[in-house]
Image (tube, rainbow, N blue to C red; front, side):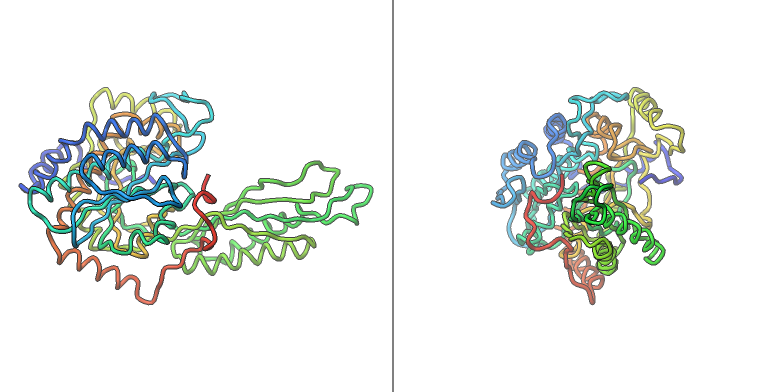
Length: 474
């Protein structure tokens, strides 16, 4: 996502500092004291990128650091790379989400030209090395301030694996990990700073398989029943369906298997399919129609059909109380300012993206106002927002104009460019968490906003109940 809005420039640094209250300054000082360790930790995770459900070293590093800071930790037998770390007792329980999985094929050195560290290996193109480290840093800083101030309640870090298609948070929901949380805060690396007011897209991913009868395509075509015919009929039906679904719907697919040779009627064929919509309930209805397209294709070609749902995320339930909390916390935390050397790096790496409009580099110093708009991406943090009040924001861990899921974003996530955005996130999370811990009324307001948003609705994941961790994602 790239935003092109007016920016306030580097002069905001003085404004941010002046706007900080004494308690906010103390919280930010606590974040800064612990920052060197967590910056180094983010780099270590970046240097050893691990795919979803395989993040053994990444989760172990974060867990060990939190245990060293005095947090109680516990894991999950069904999810070896998931864990919870908690400090404090009683209520409120404020949770912070952390992620640390990488993406396939995005290995990259921290340089502004394409140069894989290991050809074909994973890389942190979504900046999750920064995401997990910033969230853990914030939790440690909050714990320190809670001790100093004698605050009641608990701060909790959620180590959540396999966000990239694996739906790790869905399995944590099913394990009851969020049942006693009062509020959960989350962030994601982006190329701007803003509290989120976006629903994101609910989605469902599936493998659609057809099995027919092979035959010699020239010698005995009447004896064959083509699985590829069934797939093509399904694809055509889906493309016709596009005209009759809400315009926000996204449907995209690829053919992963279509036969072995042109002179053999294909016995098997498979497509990988994703359907998205801003509302989980509407997505459920659209998905039923998509399944009918596949059933029709299988029926017409006289083949057998199998649909395997591999992943499904809910949209985000907005919470205006937490949105406003994160907006003011971001403004107190401040934006990102670059050195001349960093600006030169940014100019070089942005040049590799081709000729397209770019926001000013200085825009990373700004905090943009929350803006309701349709985001075309999905996150399993949306599922969490259906069971507990969740606030979410973006921090400029990438230079303005930098798309995620690219080698360019992997390079930035390993540099001080990424770590500066990580610090914005850590300061914001710490400030917001402490305000919640200091204000039972604010926690109550967030819960009331959640209950209003959920009136007449209930959480139901489209991921089948019999799916297990590790069966989803990469």
